[in-house]
Image (cartoon, rainbow, N blue to C red; front, top):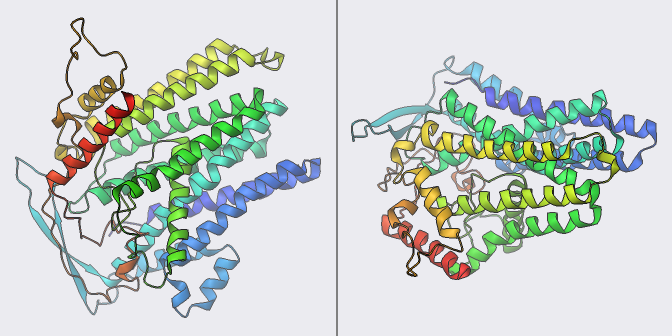
Length: 477
């Protein structure tokens, strides 16, 4: 069994960022900067409360008699207690014989065109540890994009206004950036394990390194661009942020309404329709927060039982990065035009070039990851680079030869998504193998213990992709 190191990293970042934010807010108070103090505390405490609620909800503490754990969550000490509990479970594995075990089946990556199936026994303690890992993976994403990302943007904006970086502010900015990158990394790994749940996924260090560099360049560039733009056009930054946010917030709902699917009722048995709506709104709120700063590896699909789109759409990814690059370049151009003497000590053209190159480097490391380091690249139905290239050509407004014909049509096979083997392998597991009920898979699509893959056929996936491409072609026309 693997050491729960990811849990330790999540709790360490949460504790370090909270401590640094509290210290920095005290310095703001001593300096009389009540606005900066209030915003710093707001981004810290709201995220902390959301993390406590998420852990409580996933572990179903409200329906279990655990008053001490609930009290510690109210005191904002829940992540620390959960971390200690996870390490206690890890230390107890093997000391006591398990009364029962569950048999799970995973398929290995194809070798020589064949894929073998491997059976493994999973005990009760190991199942609980898997639940802890999955819970902290989701809290890391919440902390990163609903707390650390706004916090980093705020502190960098204060640094620009005050033309200086204090030790406390610099420490908080570094921790916040690491928290965002780690949350984005966990989001990528979570997406891989959800989409290829039927396979035994082994993520190698090279893949982690590519994701880390990809997300670091992407997020740092995005935050810097927003801060520079807001420093010269304070009134216009609000429309830019709200437009981005509401666009990604409403996008999953628009797709849901277009599908004419019934309202999701399988979210939680104890939730009413109002409670289900609140949960879905919170999920789309988090989805919008992620896409505000970087591409969300986990794509929402509200008409799916697991609320996750398990197909990879190269076309959608290409559209996102092309539009985001154009937006960043436009914001930098406006900053360069309207910058004041405040930036006289900065070489503005060089700074603009560095930021654009940094975002290009992020796209480069993304291509390297999907082309060479993705753990499931052998299951890809098409070449990723060629697919993105053809999708980019599809977006060009002028793609006609002199005789009026299209230069080169887009082959349908290039736009095929990442498709795991359509034949799922289901295995019934003992419902009492651990204390988390199976009907919590909607908020925690189990990346280790649940193997109920959707029965989407290849025809349905192609139909969905062709529908997206046709809709985009009609919009461009």
